[in-house]
Length: 207
Image 1 (cartoon, rainbow, N blue to C red):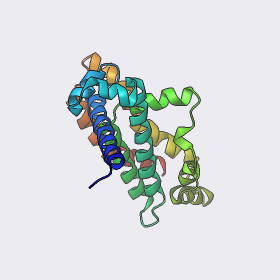
Image 2 (image 1 turned 120 degrees about the horizontal axis):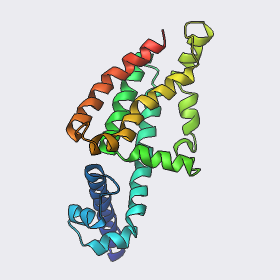
Image 3 (image 1 turned 180 degrees about the vertical axis):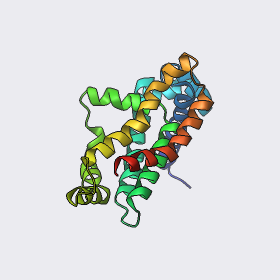
Image 4 (image 1 turned 30 degrees about the vertical axis):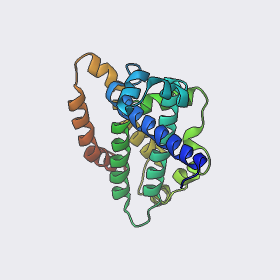
């Protein structure tokens, strides 16, 4: 027989995960502004008061979901950048693929991060994340090429352009969709195309 406290913990954990999973779906489908707590409750199949009990507000829930997205994104990127079995081109291809894939599931994440950065947050590069990126095998290869005269630009341009190529379309998406320049399905198709195009563009910069 499972002790009462252990049973309660399992129920609490299960309910929290259901709410977070529902929140991700609703935020992705409707965007942060249009999403309502009652939409999240309906998606999770639970009472509205339970969502408020566990997370207090839509803002709190959104922040929690986005912080988990940061962990997922940075872990994936650092893993690729430090994989010594991959060539530079393969690393660019895999980072673009994973980066865009995660953002397609969390399209409000770029706006969240921009707001967090300008509010003074250092969440993105906290702990060992900075070294995991800037002292990665990927950057060591780039700096070696630069030292040998085979890379004419600062390696940071590669990273900044990679971020820009991925993030800027997501920041522009709400404006493009509101003005009927692009539909949600077309935007997804364009971003899937960019998974292939971004490594080609960055390779061109490295010549």
